[in-house]
Length: 457
Ligand SMILES: Cc1cc2nc3c(=O)[nH]c(=O)nc-3n(C[C@H](O)[C@H](O)[C@H](O)COP(=O)(O)OP(=O)(O)OC[C@H]3O[C@@H](n4cnc5c(N)ncnc54)[C@H](O)[C@@H]3O)c2cc1C
Image (cartoon, rainbow, N blue to C red; front, side):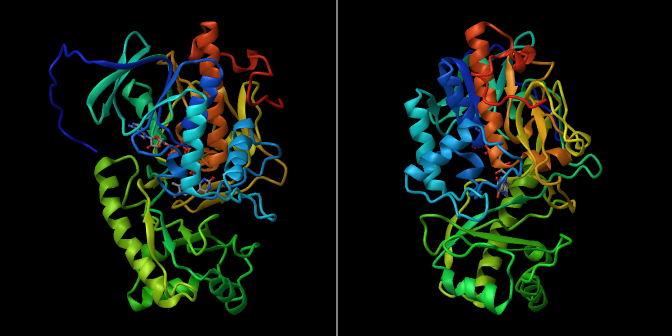
């Protein structure tokens, strides 16, 4: 993107809305984990979120279920705790067959509200980061746009959990975007939910009439899918190809389709689509992103109409909810003190300062790359991938840490981002309490009982 530059007035003053030990920007999957862990570690914590629900992709982008990491014993305490809280709120998270954690966005938002309230995290809703105030390699404050105007928030340690590495980039940390070979980001999706689905009729059609045994569970836990870019040929593919032939669907509409049931919402399916083609829409270009919203909404209507007309079980269905933000699988990634690459993934590399382990496959939509590790194997993610040389008091967490494109396609799933967030919060609180510098912290020197994850190296 090339746009002209303009001069802004200098010597502005601004009201300081809050001062904290730790300021987390982005209340998504990793940000809530970071904020609660920091608060539990004794840090006075403020969490800045531009939406009106915590959970980010899990709530605003309607992404569910939590996929398994495929790595043994990878769930850190926070992952287990949130799942237990969801269950306590009546959300039936386990299907008894797969390792998915089935969730629903409204329960997650409530659980995160409760957890942040209980731990004393101040949440600033409808507050969007706009600027970083940097002094000598140190973020002194962030500027946030709120319903009352633009204010400053000061803190000793900042955590960037925006998913887009926005705070890091504003502070001058180098970042990369997209696949090193093509420059393209992973495709975004504009997810939505459909209500009024007859799940039993749908399952009968898929399993008995189509002979599709791809989904190993049955309603109320059920999933349907097809992906034309994958090697595997799904039984549902001809159904979508027919839509292209009749002109009811575009090639892009039919490229990728997936839908999951939602616990606590009988007759509702959560659509992991439409997927916006990566060669036309970019998650790291604001103009292109905006075009993707319009095209995504139009595609959503074509796909839902097609399902209502032709998919048994959808006869009386309707769009019951659309996401409040596009689902971006990948946008920017910082270049940090360590950069985990596909070579580390394939070498199943361990790190003394590891903060999480995962073995979710390289799931690069759009680039047609998908690759698995053997059962029981995994790689680790080091703390140094969450900090950069340029800014001493900044920790970056979630899907925008320092990894190459293919590794990001593996580490981006929710459970791993939750673990990374938890580690960021533990590290922030430790630094506040012990006067240590976040980007120089040796995670492995923190006592094991305090760390959320201890390396197996
Ligand atoms: C379409 C799609 C399908 C997926 N499917 C699955 C799946 O089935 N299972 C799975 O486990 N994972 C899945 N993932 C991956 C996973 O959901 C994400 O990678 C993960 O949630 C990222 O977590 P995060 O904390 O980095 O970012 P997010 O959860 O996206 O959180 C970022 C937060 O920062 C906030 N924010 C951003 N900018 C600002 C700002 N300027 N000021 C204030 N707040 C800001 C956002 O509002 C948001 O709340 C999917 C992702 C996508 C996009």
